[in-house]
Image (cartoon, rainbow, N blue to C red; front, side, top):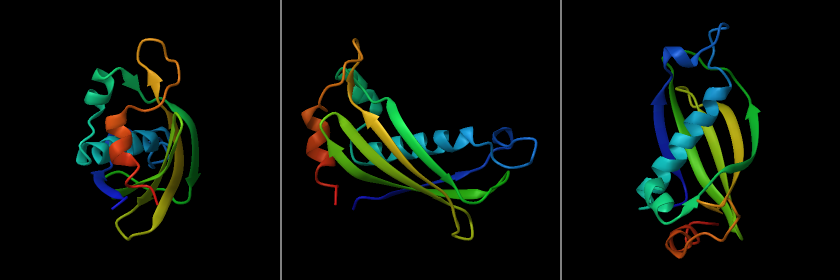
Length: 135
């Protein structure tokens, strides 16, 4: 199934003076959820790096729909929406404890060679797993 759910609790230092989660923390939540999903699929980021690849974010489109606060329990739903050439697209949806959608984000990453940062196709061990998931 092409969806992973990661649960987290908002920590006090992640909030701002307004008492809400600072916008920069959403990217941390999505990054953690993405790599937990990859790990569940048998693809650890450490293994991808050891094979000589990195996956920098090249584009991010975030939609802030509601705020959330300290100590809230959140669920990040992560789905891979595309894999073509050097790029991979991932969608995240963040829900609060009452199942309200509070953020929706589309993230694009590119496979690059670790030493040169030159874009390159993903390694075969990655594509073998990910191509089976895409709708």
